[in-house]
Amino acid sequence: MLDDQSPSSNESEGVSEGVDEQFLRIAKPADRVGGSIVDSLIKFVVLWLPIVGLSRSGWALNFWLSVSLPVLFTFLYDWLWVSFKGATPGKLVVGTRVVRESDSSRPSFKDAALRSSIYLVALVPLVGQIASPLLFVVCFALLFVDRKCRTLMDRLAGTVVIDKFEMEIDAEAEALKPTSPS
Image (cartoon, rainbow, N blue to C red; front, side, top):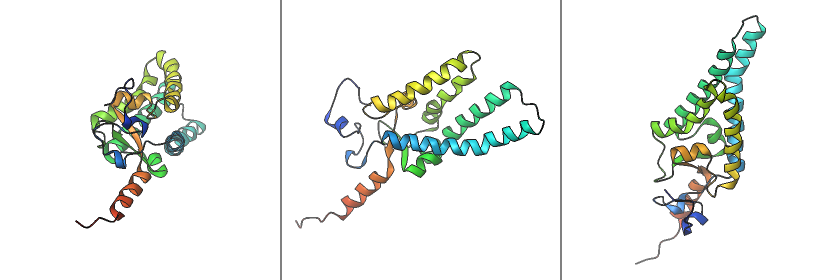
């Protein structure tokens, strides 16, 4: 993993050591935000609409259930999708994916769980209601400040989000290059 204090020629291209530099492009902040919006819409439809429907139909949902269920769902959603596919549905829609910063492989279950664990802060009584919005702001700010657009989640797990489409286009272009006769 690269140290932020030691610039290298790789960092100017947005790649890390141990990765095939030719095929790795860091996802743009706009793509990451777009993927998050798609994921939020999916989670809203899958989880929030039923909760609102139940509460309007007379079901009394206690505060703990109305907070913990969405947080746990968000953790599981992110953890399992990143573990199995290397991307959430939102990331797949915008053409990005999560890879280990060290070798560009798909994150392990442990890496993905660590990456997603930031959502669980919201479950800590009293602290979560203050820390969770602050963590969101920190993650959003890091997205635009960090040279590799890594959020706190990426830093915790040693991951980076890459542009999958550019990676595929570069691979195809490399395959189409004429070879010089020897």
